[in-house]
Image: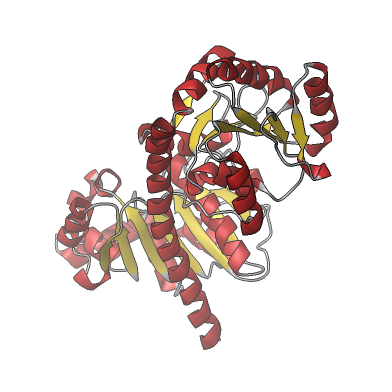
Length: 406
């Protein structure tokens, strides 16, 4: 069978096979729409993060996320993201999907290429980009039955960004043009630093110089006893230790303050303009929009909303971007991929109760120990940011060109 005949045979089969896809019950939103496909949960999480960044750069931009699995757990955190299960890889289903959504751009991650779907998209002049391509997701047993398929499908993409040099060699061997292939590393969530008042940061750094310091960020009221018990034990070894508490819900501040008063903690209330003195044991950071300051000051951060059931954790990219070592509890389902990535790099450590939190803080309160973890966190965050920045710029540039052509 010749190359052209094998491709024609596949497309003929793809037109006959399967059924026409169901018309989605969601309407296509107005404005630009990027269709992004994730081959696994980790990439779906990364695409939600990318969508948040894109929406902040371009008003009215939406991202249609398709996956082969169930609805991503973090989908409800980004209002600019719509989700749909990827359609079957046959011509009727592909045409129904593309007619309804009319995407401006397709961003395909990983691999596991769907030839009929991608060929239909290319025929409708939808620019295609393959990013984070890796070897396990690129290999397909069916390629050997359709020898011209890899070259045809890979040649549809405007750019191919691979995780490794090995993946780049593989796509070139499959027939991808050399000019469209680049090795960028893994596409992972990039952390962005939060704003802070530099004058306040300098003043606080001067006041707190040489004091052991740790931050309990975005904690639930039910986690307060564990945090305070830990701080009591830490203070026995390092009597000048200072704890910064940031409640997840500012409505809890009154109750937290009452507990601090009842237990006799010497507390500075940030909203009342109180600065820590040499004898201050706790700062209650009860204002909005100042997480950048607290992460900057604290070499160690316990990310709250993670020890009690019913919670799902908070974003570890925030402390990582500011050079803070990360501690977290077991209930981080919404951000599990991110915490796992930092933990694997030695930048984050899981704790389960006051005993394990105490041991971790006591170890990391030593500046050299915290610095090792904090550097690892920053390294992971900055690498992810570089790849994300490139993909974001690539997409926004293409949207600009498409608008100019209309």
